[in-house]
Amino acid sequence: MATIQDIPGSEAPAASRVKINSNFAALNTELAQKATSAALTSGLAAKADASALTSGLAGKSDTSHTHSAATTSAPGFMSAADKTKLDGISESGTPGADGDDGWSPVFAIVTDSARRVLQIVDWAGGAGTKPSVVNQFIGASGIVSSAAAAVDIRGATGAPGSGAGDLLSTNNLSDLASAATARTNLGIGSVDNTADSAKPVSAAQAAADAAVQAAAVQRSNHTGTQIAATISDFTASARAQVEAALVAGANVTITPAGSGASRTLTIAASVSGGSGDVTQTGAQTLTNKRITKRASVSTTTATLTPNIDNFDSIKLTAQAENLAIANPTGTPTEDQALLISVKASGGARQITFGTAYAIPSGSSLASPYTLASGERIRFAFVYDSASAKWDIMTATPGLS
Image (cartoon, rainbow, N blue to C red; front, side):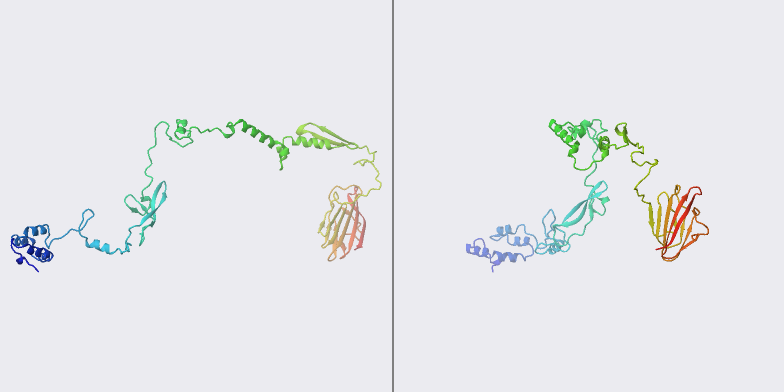
């Protein structure tokens, strides 16, 4: 290997210079071990290639020099803290356990009275561990925990207008200085507020409406039912139909009076009694006529009160308790008959009579009368108006 001492003078042949150039890399390695580049430059100043060597070493730093760490605005060496962060990233580029690069917040608009604020509800788009900040809000200088401290994304309400025609009220435009101008500004100047019933229609539409109305009022077109009160001439028409259907028979007269809703029909009978008709008060003889008695039939009762206006015959078919026959009610007529039939059931029954019944004191029917179990007895009474009593005419015991 060539050394500095082997370098000949300027008169050395070209072959010697080639040898030096071929070993220049090894020479540089040896020069790096010298004390300072300044001393080396001084020792080489008289040599044949000193100027070239000096030029090659210009700007080189001492072995004790330092470099500044890189910043966001200037290049430099990597700091130890940056190296630690770099080591935390895997070869695939996935963030480490504490990394949050690539995550984007998902916002929801939340109502806070009249305000609208943003709330972080989730994170999306990242890899690794998702940030844990959720259900927080965006404030003026960062994340806040309450909606009240968050920023209203709608901003402050603008100042109301004051120019002519500005919409200053929403009270149906009724309290504006110029409602017409306000409608024009809103783009609704051509709106017609006329009621639908008062709006004009075309001649064709009017004719069609009239045809529909005419068909609707025709009763022949009705398929359902209609309340009589809603038909204007129903009462008069119905009355006329009834009046026309009535035919007066013999000794009967029909007398109409009045008109319209107050019209009446009076039906009267004029029977002389000589034509074979039965009158209410006339003296007449009935031949071959049967009169069916008005009868009441029941099983048992503790007290029997005959109503002689409604019944002529009363029967108790299974008297299961003692019986009190009370005074009849109603308005009796002279010699009106009353029949009472009682059959005991489940044991002997005692029968007592009210004070309006006339029964001889020595009679076996004197009150109380005992009716054997299973026995039936039939009483026949006739009313005597002079004594206002019901005289007993017959009593038939021992019937089954």
